[in-house]
Length: 290
Image (cartoon, rainbow, N blue to C red; front, side, top):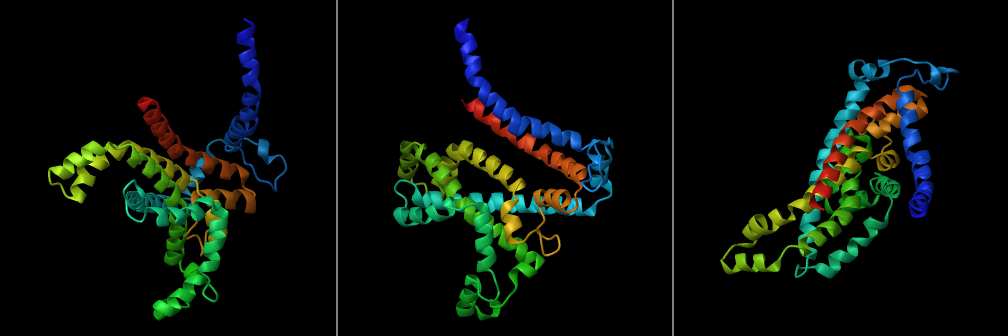
């Protein structure tokens, strides 16, 4: 009996911390999403509004659907391109792969930098007056020199995607290297003895056995891409206009700048819906394998 009591007492501090830092704020944000919730209106945080914040987002707010579109395209591009590049680097860095030591050293820097710092770095590198890329294009491709990358909606969005890929490729590469190390060498060698080309060995032998790791990589990257904020905030602040405004930035913009806490909370809960499905898929897959 004493042992049972002790184990609950040992877990109690962790439960209190999780409740105070995660569960209670989550429930409070859900409550706020059904209120008027304006910082410039005293008492509005307790004035019940019902589902109007949610219906406003769906039917009366074009900026919300713009943020949904930007987030969806951003997520698809970053997940697809990051996974493909990480797979290519993992093949180079896998045991027996070429350029292993040189490329592996280059992975350290992006992996160590925070997303906010990456956003600031890319903002300076793409500056049309003194940026690194402007100087590079001036030497290699003069017609591209002097372009205001972050002032053009399409180019600014492309820069945001590039910054995300640069920051995430190292981590996913290391994960995929671990996955490649678990692929039995005898199956690869048997396929090579049978005369299979390198592409067929990868497609028919390596890729099917790497599928579980790839599934986890894609799900995790999708979750992080959907909720990206700090990198976008530091790089473009959602601009020009709303060309790079993701849902996380849209929530911040409405909640912190306009003081619409109730509306921002409702949009945040709408963003939770795809997160729940992705988290459920990840948890179900991991626990099923274990």
